[in-house]
Image (tube, rainbow, N blue to C red; front, side, top):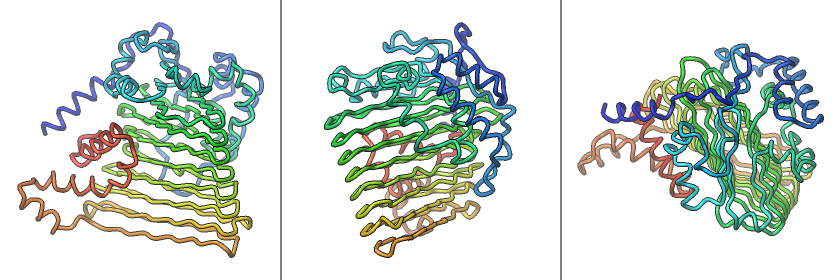
Length: 468
């Protein structure tokens, strides 16, 4: 009980609304052309962006909701506010961020992380960035890291137009169309050819408004022979109404370039997390996905790698924890679209207290994928007899000269292991947490130390039932 009380106290401190209304703005709930036009006008966007928004809105209204996966019947767009502007402008100096917003991010460790080792940090609160900064050393190498809306009005505007919603088009699915209509906030990263970033960049997204949606867009372009590690974190308070996250991530990896994209998502359990992420790799390019998914009431999350150039590589390492009241449908997609491409997928899922965890994988080997290979491995751990875990693989093989493999295991915690640890003076609860952390170790070891600690703490709180 002590742990639960402590977490509740922290949550109350974290999840207060912004008290000052000066400079804030909240759009009407629902989704209409007038709302879309108003969002675009407030941002002073170029005409092509408004056209994209309006076309996306048209597609959204035409397109049905997918008839597979967890139910999203509890999500009513007529009650979702699509744009909430916090009562501040974007700052590059942390001291200039309003105290109540700063307190939220201080408790989440954003400034401390930046001071420790990050090359740049962006922090989004509701629908807009409130803080963005990049270290001078990175800027001197020609690295660009800014809010994407800011970049739309700068020298990289045409580059953004060439790439924006080209990997994820509005016709992908209904919520990609929704994103195209009402997107707001997010980051733009450009790493010039040959530049190797020694330290990561990070963006953190906080949806604080009740009954609202967050629709940030992240666009990263890593040119030939360049290297980048990008870290994304997400959180939100729990309310008694639905919130929605329908962001988009588009990653372009050049020839012989390398990009690691790490995510720790800790949404609240009233959140519908319908995010879309996609990467394209050119010849000998490499994309690494590291994913930890916690929280959210319903989740649809399937990062996709398109290996478009010879010898391009993709790896996905992920973990999902589904507790009481959660239905998390996650996985990974891979398209082998060139010769000698390789991909690996290694996932872990944990379900507890009636939580439902579903892993979906999709591997497509095109006729051009001669000599390519892909392995998919999914391991599920069920902590009781009322939870559920499913594995749904899909393989579309259109080339004879490929090697594709899939394996899945579902298990439970061994009573012998629990007994052994308890015989060494460890409580049963601590023993179970230790075993689950060991199960999650392949993911945590791929994260920087600070984020591995955060993930292990989230697992501990989930095991204690202390996350609401």
